[in-house]
Image 1 (tube, one colour):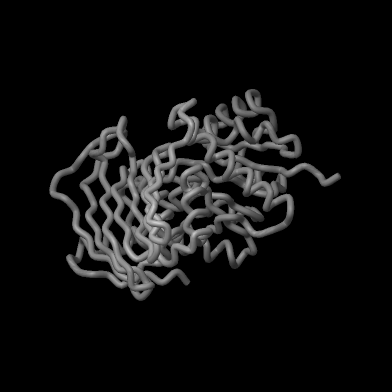
Image 2 (cartoon, one colour):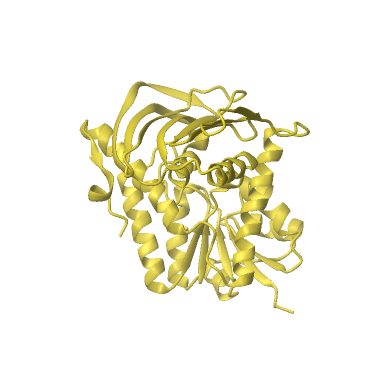
Length: 333
């Protein structure tokens, strides 16, 4: 029998308590360790979910965990991750966004540079990195990806997206996941600062060209009402179109080959937050399986840097009022 996986948790906040630890404590081959800036929170987590609290990040790494899940608030994630790397962590699994010193609605060019330096240091030290990006594990995302592949829809030619900032990092990742890399972006910010669900920022209005020659538009805002869909994304492929809306919304498929218009709704026996929790379970299960098998993580840390790359380009385009060629101005390596 294989020895248990040692999974360390750095940062015991609501996300850790509500979306990570309830699942992790059900895994019979997982031992848990905890660190938090406030040591009492680590001790409380150990009492509630089982495992060992540690007073310092150095002590946490000295426990020799198979992976450290970095679940701190994004505004402090860079400093904590840097300390973990300096202490010798073997693997890091990041919440999103990878780095955001001023919060996920205010990602800057410096955040991209810090994220790039962080992953560069990880490579130098031989530390494997991974991302959560649990929106890839929503039931409708899985269905959309499967349908596009099985029906040979081809390349994505156009994208249209409207996104609440609460989902912003995830939806930029979904854009890359379905459509590939963005070549050039042109963006504006609204003069009005909108507020909603703890976010306080102007709207972002962006148009972009994909490397494959396609293109699209993207709106980011804090002004969408919370009771309505928090994001809507339409992907127009060469031979079909797929529309996704919200965490547990209806999936719409237009099949160019059969000329059928399909609507897929998931069973409504729970709230959107049930679907949200289930996506964490799928994401974490996939990651734990990669640790058990010695395989590569399902979502590498580089995908988190690619999301920041796009954000940095959007910010520069807004500031300098010009198109930005992303790979040239913000190279990943």
